[in-house]
Image (cartoon, rainbow, N blue to C red; front, side, top):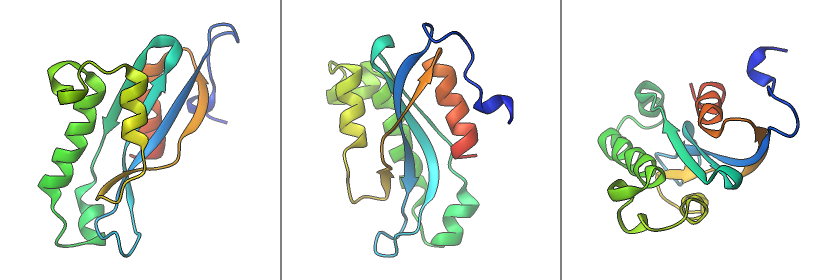
Length: 137
């Protein structure tokens, strides 16, 4: 087992978090997708974060006519909503939990959230990076 699967810290230090993978489905009717990001929410830390990474070659392999710029813009919008403030637009005043729930709601667009999973972490921001490395890159 590698270090990337080991949760460090004592049991009292760990907090429950929820996460979902962001998928890019360039042709919804075909159902093919690539992972392009992760959303993480930790209520105890009032944390919601997103990290994205678009593998353009993989996307174009699924659909040579995919709107790469549009997908990148959608992924940036998700990161902005998680960051809060002006970047979150109308959701700027929403709580982190409310922003996470809105982002993981099912939708039939090119960028879609996967199912929500749970875990334990001592550092939600570091967990966001770890999940990006493990599930997307």
